[in-house]
Image 1 (cartoon, rainbow, N blue to C red):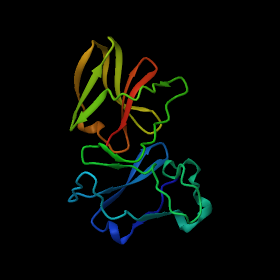
Image 2 (tube, helix red, strand yellow):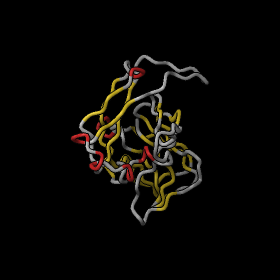
Image 3 (cartoon, rainbow, N blue to C red):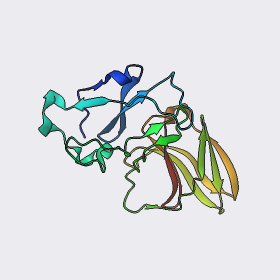
Image 4 (cartoon, one colour):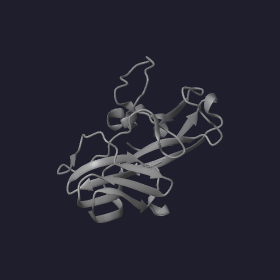
Length: 190
């Protein structure tokens, strides 16, 4: 998807800081950050309204077919919940939606265990290993391209701690734990 010329925010997003973020390849997303908004459990804030337009306002220049945020919402004027649009808290914890999975290479198998083995707290990552083996902890972009290798080597059963360098903590990237060509856990970096 070609990045839009600009995006505009609706009146309910006046306190948001907006930016266009490159996710890898030619994929971009809009990030809206609310610095002074605190949500208590079960509470919500005003709806977020923003729009995008293609270069020169030409509809033919844009196709939503490869846009992860359009997954499952159909076409037309009907309002639907877009669970492919994600809401994260300040620490990168998922509050709403389904994070699109990176496009890993064909020879990579993504484990469907559902168990989270990786916890991030600030610039530290805690990895829980249940089987001794050779592991990789990496930061990848939306296309599965490795941008930073945080760890490569043998881990025994237990919890392990790895620091993420500031240069690797870019929005739109993912932390990936893998053993060989099997992805055991992936999560979006804030």
